[in-house]
Length: 313
Length: 323
Image (cartoon, rainbow over all chains, first blue to last red; front, side):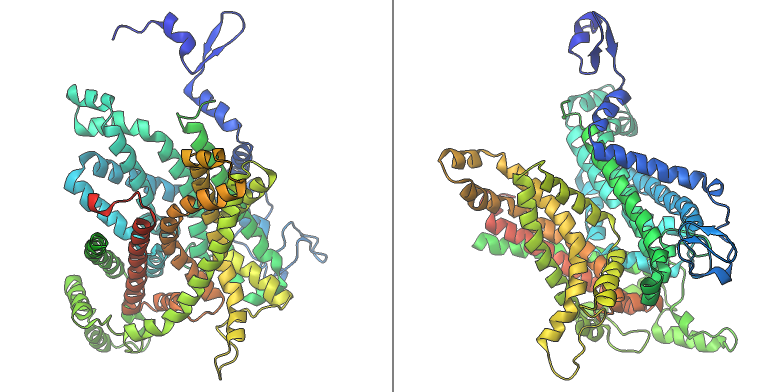
């Protein structure tokens, strides 16, 4: 192993782009990933839609003249359009309490997206730490830790989610907690698998040989190499969290009104007469849930290909 | 054959500690979380503290968690008894057993429909990779995964039951006097199709990738080189091999399917286990929740076991003695 010679290495390196003449430009990691990601059109659309949803959430107060917690009971169940008597405009109509649906959707985006993101951060951290410990130490530690994961994955977890959700007082943080309690097992499994294969590689052996601490080896050498599957699973976690939040809130066990969330806007749909007569109350929040989840899944799919080092471009 | 018996025996033994861990996790979670099963008896205005202590004593919830768990486990292991409902004192086992047929009918039908649709879709998408129809199927399965199951149920009820009035929206039957197969099937259509929707989406994706994996392999090329028709190559050689991993996938889908039935049974007023546990959750009937969770877990563990055994039976490459 000599000192790397840039003039020799340059042309064969994967991320070197030949510019005009003898000019070479070294492409950064991010730009390589973006170039590959762009090829998947659905993933680009997904990213656009998701960004739009985030913008709706951030700028919610600027996008509507109404407040999400102010009702006018006399304007309930007004179909999309303008109310003739008062001349007030309701883009997506009003719900049972007379709340403006568009307003509740943009403010609901804040809640639904933050719950999904916060729960994702929790599941990712727990999953990575758990999987890393289990995979790196191996042996009986790994055996016991993975049996626990097996057990959790064999329980139809939505049963347990409902138990927890029914017992603790529902709020934003309790919903995040409920979604995080069991959400980490998939991540733990993936990280463990990655680490088991990485552990046998020479560069980890080298790190150990230089006398690095176990924790340092895991965090500086092993985990950065497992970043691709971690990112993909984390993205898909956001999608499943949005779905789970909407399911919990639909049953009345998630975010509580008057705080709007996409899920609890659908609670009124439990009565079939509402669905039958006031379809817009149900359709719009449902559409936003579906669009966002679809977008996030497309992003995950695009990242999977873009981050895979074995993919040739 | 002796190897297989041994394998089945060993795997069944391994399932016992797994079920044990599941019961501990569920029990801990239920009892550690703040909340009181006697809350439903309490009337804050007329409340008498002594009565509640009596009720708590009677239900056994005044004791430490490990004693409660020990009692629960002892009853289960020695007598096969899952305890008694807090609500009406009925044996939990009886309650669940009376609900199982409805749930199994619903899940079985949904799974059957899903297999029937997902396999041809997956095979077609794999064989005609990147064709317009493949893109349509792919988009549909993304959609199938993205739509919450309760939302599909609502749309289906709205369209096929309320607007078109083709199928009934709720219940198991409308003929309560005799067993009427036609009436039962008529009620089964909407809930089972709704439940199958998400399943088709994910299973057809697995089928597609499994088929793509097989098509690349040498024996398929050999079959083509022998001059066999494309039809024979795909359906006789490739498909049979591609189906093997689907057995495992089916078993892995089961917990999610149980989650789906919770909503479907609730929305279609289908008197199964899911509906039983949702109502138990709202009144905090610990014994019933624990019972349904355990029965569902046993079914999941058992189906995983069956899948592994089937896997070993159909795939000659797996040799049982060697692991």
